[in-house]
Length: 487
Image 1 (tube, rainbow, N blue to C red):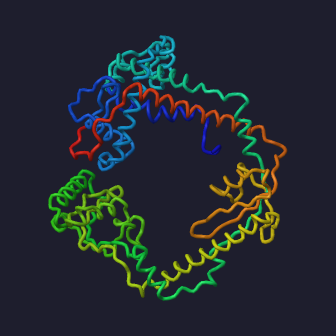
Image 2: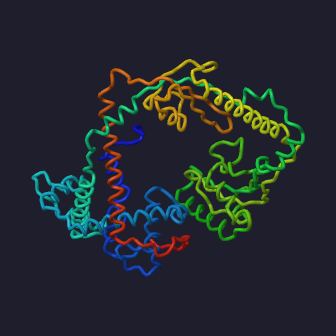
């Protein structure tokens, strides 16, 4: 836990960056003041709708910011994330306005002077270049009133978040209690019952192998694959950039407009139509990284419905600077179950592993039952080691939790932990101690991290409260974006 949490300021900065700050830098201040779109309402916050068109436009802009393409902007998952972000922004905006927070003139001026672009507008004599300032705003598509409003709004958000973040740990200090729990050490001995140690004791019959093969046919399928043909347009270093750009446009247009064949584009641009058999969703084995069919976008497109079902050319894809590729599926080979004689060795391996695991689990259960009656018997266990939550050794997840939660009054105690696919491990716990020489720096870091968790929890509660007060209401589910979403 402690390795994954940061100081509360950083958590809140991340929340602001993801949920709040983009409201102006990304969507524009009009996101809070202009909801006149006539598209279907998706969600209403305080009676004001967020529309499908607004989500589409925001998704397109965000995709461009992160270097994505139109497919990313139109995906339901991406657009849902954008919608969630818009809802969060509206809730925070509603809370700020409802609380009637105020920003003083001095605070606003100080905030503006912290913006590098604003500082750069001051002349050597200390005067402010108002003309350049107005040009800068005009280039951003906002006026002075909108700019000052957005900065004031950001400061109000800062006030709000800082007030929410002032969460103190109650006395006695929870951080000291938690640090003590994480430092507490327990002496443990381990005894493993692994399937590999029982493989020599199993010998599945032909009937058992055949029954397993029949019941688990999916495990023995060959992957689907396609045989394809493709063409590649490469820029000639001696060629004029404008001329290549025109060729690239021709390449893209012809492969799209005449999508039932690559030949017209190949003939027009004097390209050779190449072939490749056995292309799977993982690509082609044994080819260079820069091979056209090694590109993930090309492979993904070739397994799309248009390419597989209708045998259409895929949209021209730029795989690297000056290289464009289009391809089409010639033959689609669906996944199919391999004959038993081809996978007999793998069937036997899997059946043997499962049978050996059952023997290991049974042996562990028998030993565990005996140890419950005589827990002091440490025969067969490995040498004892000291572990703690801060220093867990090889113990993870459920094993660590169970070992560390055993009541010391019951020592020596035996803990049985199943390892699916492997067997079972027994842990013998018989002593507990507090280490000497506690690191004060570690304690301080843990206290800060616990404070961060408290602040994060407080902020989550704050958002839940204002979501309820703002009357957030889902009107319509988010649907697949239309290809003609506006910008």
